[in-house]
Amino acid sequence: MADIAQEAGFRKNKKLKDALLQHKALSRQGFSERLFGLLFSGLVYPQIWEDPDVDMTAMELTEGHSIVTIGSGGCNMLAYLSRAPKKIDVVDLNPHHVALNRLKLAAFRHLPGHGDVVRHFGMDGVRSNSKSYDKFVAPHLDTATRTYWEKRSLLGRRRIGVFDRNIYRTGLLGRFIGAGHLIARMHGTDLTEMANARSLREQRQFFDEKIAPLFEKPVIRWITSRKSSLFGLGIPPQQYDELASLAADGSIAPVLRQRLEKLACHFPLRDNYFAWQAFVRRYPKTEEGTLPTYLKAENFQMIRNNADRVTVHHASFTELLVRKAAMSVDRYVLLDAQDWMTDQQLNDLWTEITRTAAPGARVIFRTAAEKTVLHGRLTSALLDQWTYLEDRSAELNLQDRSAIYGGFHIYVKKA
Image (cartoon, rainbow, N blue to C red; front, side):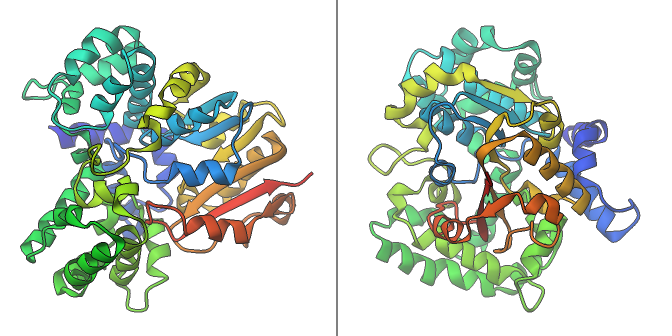
């Protein structure tokens, strides 16, 4: 029944269909796009997989800035509030992400304190979270969002009950990570043992001895040679093709190995909550490491005070910008959405970005491959109005703890 509901949701979500579908249904590419769309129509990202600290450094984010960003799991939008921007417009084509973003904002506004927010979004197995939701959060939600979180499954469980367990093991990405752990165990490797590493040296040793050999296994190379294998990461067919262009033999196993190596070995485990989610499937406890930026105690009051500066829209980036005044936006966060776009969609988006950009505005985005997607695709009339900070982009890409993207890019509006 859940699959039927999900399929119906994709059929009804015209905005998502328009963004994803580029080929005829009966073509091979069209079938892949529709399969991805079906999977993407449910909750995909319970946590966003772009490093907010890199984002804020790249944007040079300060008080007074107006931001438009894609929502995803909502973590980065909340982190940006710690810098007291003037306004944040959050867009997302996935209604599940819209509901999650609105829930997180309401939780910051209305839960009693920082510890309560951490129990909801930073810890697993807290059985009282749904009761806290009922008492403090639910009365302040809009009708659609409250209906979403209180909807019951066939077993009678309310959606909000996932926070009594572990939301990060749900959603498309959470289940994909779970499948990865299962495959690793079938080959004799328990990925959760990464938590025992006490230094970068021990992290490297665990990767070299336990994880790297997995990518030579025939079954893993076979799985990763198929586009649908990475749909669980939220990687659509177009983005898979970008990754495959980096591999000589058609399997993207070597590319995935390289990205996972960065995640496992380039940052101390206690400082990298992305690695904790990948290898241990939860956030670290206080004695184990640090929480995401939006859950740190020192940021709580600032985020709480500024939460009313955010508006969450079920809309595309371009759709929202069309409604904005010229020169009214200072910062744009596109995540990796442009990897999905046709040339026409890309030029339509940047037409609106260029029109609405304030002097000195900055655009940041990530790409599956290393190179920017704009050169050779965006018209010169648009591209010539922007400066690409190539060296700074490469420098910050090395600092991105999530490690799953090939490129990070910064563009600045010319005077």
